[in-house]
Length: 344
Image (cartoon, rainbow, N blue to C red; front, top):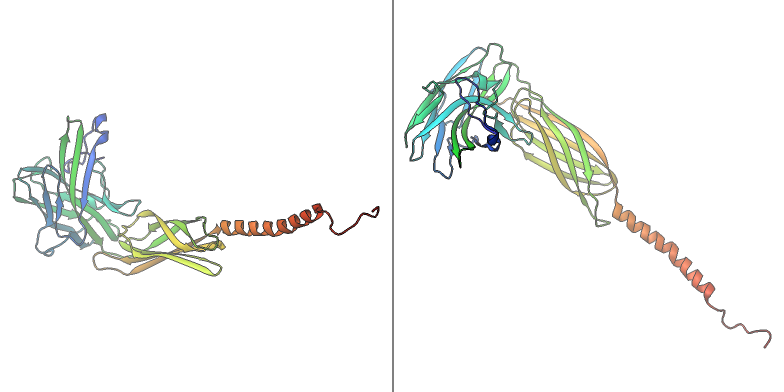
């Protein structure tokens, strides 16, 4: 749910009960892009880009190496790519990693407490909006004020542009947002860290008595350090005479403090009564200047009973016992042949 967020007051107006159906559209610029584009069926589109200058040319987003108490000035360029004029709200907010591991920004009505609170944008109006003619561009200067007591390491946020529209009978509000990421690495000891916890394993029953099955491994991955990291996670299941492995591909970056829940499906698991799951996460530090790597591991065990094989063994054993008994009973019921009656 999105509400209109004015940078001048940092307060969001209440919506009526009907606005519970408010829709939000948020775009985040990935490192491979140099501009951000938003579009909708009404053809209202705009793009964002950092202004070329002393901080660099052709930048994908805003990234700075800073010290506590430092001020950084930069410029956001907003271009109206539609045939109608636009009025956009502009403000700064915090970035976060969602529970599913994706990078996102705070909802419009939530107050930033980290880098977003360090940003002051000069929209040139009292209400924190910019008006842009069709095909035109405007420059929005902003200042990043690093607090004197800012903690060392990576801080993440975004500069946001927002178009608020009423649709239908006016009871439904759509907040279309487009943002560029802002990263700041505060000088000081960089201490990357990851933790793997709450590992759980479920081995699924195998239909084939002599075949392999699959297992579901879940675990929690936490960025316990003060640096942005891109984790590569590997899950290995081992048992008597068998092993299976999954993962090994880099995931999306995790911001400091991020907590995500992972679910990994491992194929080719042999149900050998007991299996051990070993989870390993290797984190590569990314951001201004890099910064090394970190590793975390955890494990768990689970039963992997070969039920179909046991059922087959039980059936074979039952048949092996039943067959002689059946033959013996049939033999006792059959009349003796070749024995004459003594009375004849």
